[in-house]
Image 1 (tube, rainbow, N blue to C red):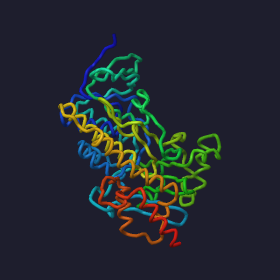
Image 2: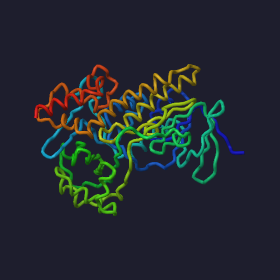
Image 3: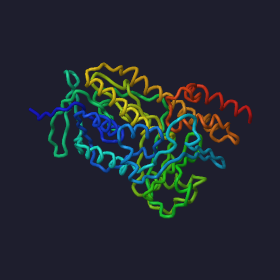
Image 4: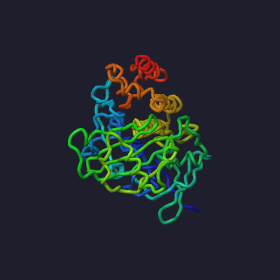
Length: 410
């Protein structure tokens, strides 16, 4: 018989979503266990945060420790296409909320969060993989495999799956389904930018549009490293060399604004490829479990929404799980699934309208409407539940309507 341990709440995954859940629950004296498949520090994508994350880190008690590590502050974002520029300053957004956040090498950032949670006495078992899950009894039981190959079990009163692209429970419980968004893929790497421009050119996250559905990201970090990546329809990448490093430099040669800037830098690692980025699930919760972050829904990296939804869902799931532990009956459908889907729907509209060109027409308009820009900026900052914002409330049609007016104007 396998060894079994008991805990109130089991969290799968030690990324930002799991650590926000753990931070909140630890503050409420909940008995926790975290299992993480990898050893930290480890590479992860999702390096650009948006301001809504700050509210969640603050409530989980993690904001102070992040501030101490000097990550590159992010005050906005810039979009470039040929000679046109659309720049957004978070301090100029519609409504209340944080005016800045960070762009971070996730290996370092996630390690900071995990070490802080460990320092509070939470047990994080690294190099430990969940291999099976049984939700048929009163309490869920998961089987885990340790780095030495031995297996054991954990019985918990509730399970929060924050396993990211590992998508543990969606795979084990057959909860995965195709995303409604178009199929895009991504290729990315890091360089050490030894000659980096001073000021905005060396600090501001920038997206250069090569074609309507093809774009490049530039994300500079405070440690001198820089993240470079391309997102495009999956078949776009087929035109390049089979060697990933040669292929990446061929893509770099297609840049306009950044042409030549990165040609002489060696790549820090062989470019990584994520095919068919968007992910979805049949449900966001079930009896005694909740899916958070990328283990639930992932849209597209264009507006850096991944960590924001990860921390939002991680915090919200933790709050509802705590109520359940305390004998209450939280409304998971209204207060979790419906709530998260409202925000996901807003960003989904923006992703669709980015790739069909309507949002790009607005971003790159020579004389943008100042109020429209403030309202769109609030969405880019992650405040996608503010129904006072017309670009949130009317997200399904307002972008197309404004773009059509611009097109008629031209």
